[in-house]
Length: 133
Image (cartoon, rainbow, N blue to C red; front, side, top):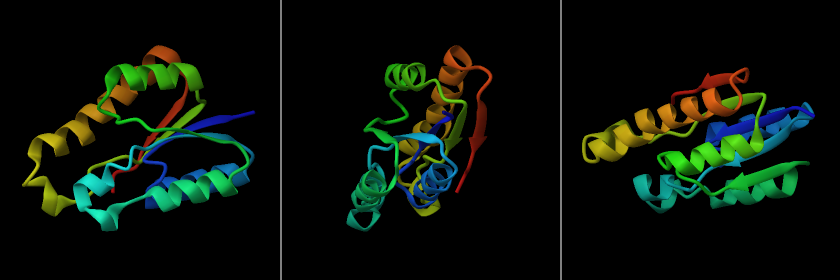
């Protein structure tokens, strides 16, 4: 069975990626820590999407993990060993970026670097797709 790791899996794009690949028969692992609620307030809360994924997908496992957590990302990628990674996790608000420049950079740049390095170490043949919103 093909294994897919989706970051930002409870967000708008990530949840659709999960649903699409589930319909194709892939086993889906998602990383999301609902950081949107921190960045955007209550209207950014993605818990409803997470519950929908858990109910509707055949094989979905969830990791409540911040992609800035390098050891955690290394562990998850080593555990899942995906054939493909779709990276949709971001700090999505350009307006907020000016107010939180370090959080913005660490999420978007360092988080991406953590994922790339984890894939390089654990599953270097995996396809890596970065979807920047």
